[in-house]
Every structure is written in structure tokens, then in C-alpha cells.
Image 1 (cartoon, rainbow, N blue to C red):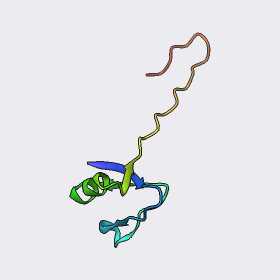
Image 2: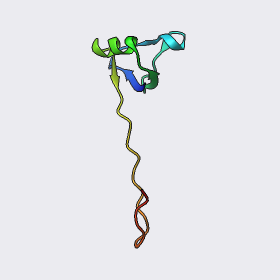
Image 3: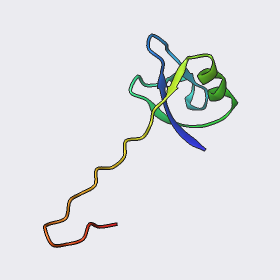
Length: 66
């Protein structure tokens, strides 16, 4: 499973599967596993909820695309 996470405010978190580079402050997708589960439980990272794509409005008289 892939999740998007970012460091909690004031934290620097290393990514073991990326040569221990720092997790970017804006967040990044990671492969979820015990390392990230523990980091979340300890308050080192936060989950980023993906933004829902904005629904485009169809011109008047046409049904919305599904």
C-alpha cells in the first residue's frame, strides 16, 4: 500500500528506502510498512489526505461527465 505522508511540524524524518534522505516537508508517497506505522504512532509523520479532483461543470444542457 502506498500512502502520502509528511513530517510532523518541527520534525525531520529519514526515508530508509531512499538512502536515508530526508522526507520532504511538503510530503511524499511512501510504501507503507512497519517503519512508517511506528513513525505515525510516535507523532513523527502525518498522513496527507489526497485532494479530490474538482468536478468540471459541463456547458448548460449537457449532462455532467461521470
